[in-house]
Image (tube, rainbow, N blue to C red; front, side, top):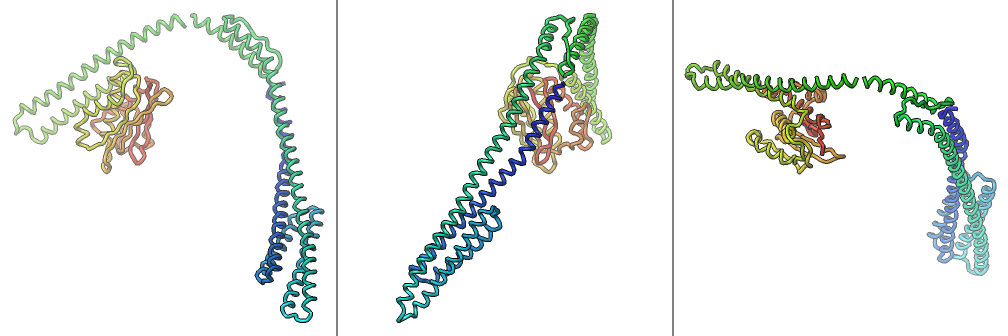
Amino acid sequence: MRITTRLRLTSTVTIVALVVLTPVLIWSFIAFKNAKNDYVLANTIKVNFFERASFRDQYFLYREDRARTLWEKNKETADDLLRQANIQFHREDDRHILERLRASIEDTTAIFHRIVNNTEVLKTATGNRQVYEELDKRLYSQLLMKANTVRDTATTLQDTSARRIELSYEYMTFIVGLFAITLALTTILTSMQLDKLIRKRLEPLHDGAKIVAGGDLGYRIQSDGSDEFAELAQSFNAMTESLHASINQLKEEITDRKQIENKLARAHAELELFTRIAAHHLQEPARRLVSFVQRLRSLLPAELLNEDATASLYFIEQSATRQSTLVRDIQLYLAADQPRSTVEKIAVAGVITKLLERKALPISETGVRVEYNDMPSVEIDYPRLKDIFNILIDNALKYQHPERMPQITVSGELKEGRIIFHVADNGVGVPAEYRERVFGVFERLQTHDNQNSTGIGLAIVRRIIESCGGSIALQETPGGGATVVFDLPG
């Protein structure tokens, strides 16, 4: 039988048992709650009796209308409690007790009213006053006897409710215990059965894996039965056969692979050499163009330097400068995945301080405020770390918001061996649909078009960070702007 089938059967038995016990458990909770509510009501009835007894005693001491009025109001409350009890109590013995209690209360009411009437008569009695006084004493004695009956009956009702609470609590405790024991037993039995089965079926797989790991690829695990372990043994044998065949083939992909690796190494070296030579030859015409434009400005007479000539010279100079910058950025992009100096622990705050000193003029012109904390050191080469923050700070300086005082905030914290950096600005920001595209080569947003931008900066940053095993993303700064989030090894 398959293990999943065994588990389903065991689970089904457990669920059936719990389904049977659950209504009983719910019923026991309801019974306990009802018994508790009955006890509370019985206790309220008893408290009401003692309050009425105190009003009665006050009346007999002082014969004041105020005490009589309070006694009458208390009697109304007692009637309301009895009506509620008739609705709430359903047991036959409880109803008998309530009936006796009601009759006793009515008797005390009648006697109390007779005493009140006799008191009024005593106020005007003259010759037969002694008779009314004796009647008053007898009525008071009868009232006390009936009051004791009311008290005892209310106590009986309370005691009955209390015993019912105890019984329902014991029953509920028993059901909860049975519920827990059933769940625990099924869990334990299932675990013991599965443990025994898995141990028995895992041993051949464990031994076979050790033999194959020792180098005997011709060994095959014996698989009997039709459960998941038999399927696993068959899969293991098939994997061993495939591995044996693959190793034989690998003994033959290795020589060819070494030759391919050698060719790739030579090609990579040739590509690096070509890149350096091409960059040099592309930079040289750009530098010459800038030099000749500057010479023309100094050599041409002022009358020849009209508006068109000046604009043309400016355009040539700017284009040559941009070409030089573009070639430089391409060089940085191609070299971004390789260290350009010793990889070591570098203090980030010191790098940013030096960059800001170099950018003092544009920072003072724009009035931008740059804030950064004492961030943890990162393990990287200095040139590439400088390129990362140089590009990100330059971008923040370029794309400022016209209606906000510009601000750049750099922060970093150590988390699980990596330094998580946030470079945030309050500039124009980047729409959500473009936040991935801006990391591509030559990607510039039309809305943020800047002729001084080559569209490679963020691509260089991403290439450096990913070569260090990190990742980079662009988020929106709270309140507006863009935040670049990336991580480097700590």
